[in-house]
Length: 474
Image 1: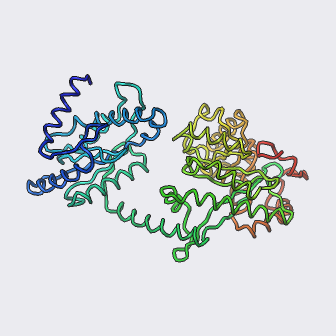
Image 2 (image 1 turned 180 degrees about the vertical axis):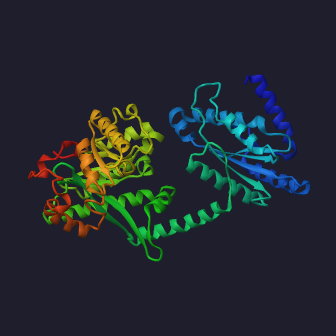
Image 3 (image 1 turned 135 degrees about the vertical axis):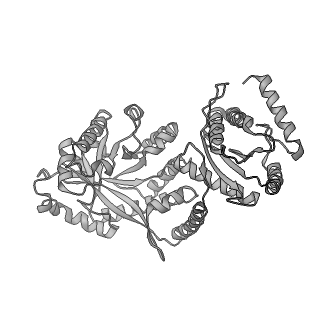
């Protein structure tokens, strides 16, 4: 769009909004949120008289922070203007648009039979690269709520459109998500869960359970993964799939990670004092943890306060972090390696990361997701997938751990394919620290029993010295 055309559009746009006496945002030259709210109330009053339905579209610009990190204020401003330029031409007379917050735009549009098509077209226009070519492609999530179907006041309509946009962000939807009442119910439940989670941290309701990682050749214990659990005083056990996302969207996720790491290091010290050594201590880190600027220094502080002894600390991170923010991912991995911490890529294969994306990353271990392991003894396709993953790991000089092994058939196939280690219900379900001590004592004899007959090589290996160095031992 040339400068003359752009100026004409802006002048025409301003003239059509003069009746609303709007104040404008200096960056995008769009109305700001204060004047938008006032104009929105008048628009809805008139719509009610005219029998006109209104569609309120909430547009979130997801990669504004990233663009600011790359190009500073100028880069962020150019990205904002790119979106504003894409949205502005779609606003007709009697409709509204504004920059509602740092990364959010709101549009109040007349609803008709073509509204869905119109919304998709305007968002497509707003998501295009700028003709300037100096900033990234806008990444957008959007939600829409209708007046008077969903709400009859401006404040409620804005809130409901925001809820729909949150749903779009979480589901990575490229099209607008329509508000429904269940979103409001879910938000209230989430608020209650967050409140209870804060109390759980305060009252020490969170605990760790442990699951061993087993050498698939010798049957020796290579390590243990600590898994956070929450037993709510009235709800009972709350699944991590419920409370971890809530924690990630609040400030609680860092506190949960610190709690888990501190508990694992303390439990490992008790095992050592009882003469029970575990070579590797693995703890899960959320993408939200790793993104935090103080993450590495916090890990270092906990290690210094409670050293893991001869055990090696391993932090498990998911593929999603690398795919969403690769430069940060690499920076954090290098920093963790610099303080002597190993890093595993958890749930590998669930996001289909390619070989080139992994090459050169400072990783130690690749964990094969249970969806590839389940039924691998009965499916040639599953065997081919696992073989491909392990071939990739060997080229990358990464150790391999198969998750979710449930029977000896899966164990034998994975062992024959060259997988180094595994964990799952076949060896042990996740158990508390006290019971894990019992497992450590009983395992040397149990692995020789009928369940694992001929599964492991009968070699008496001292794990302190002979474990594959990929798993972190000296």
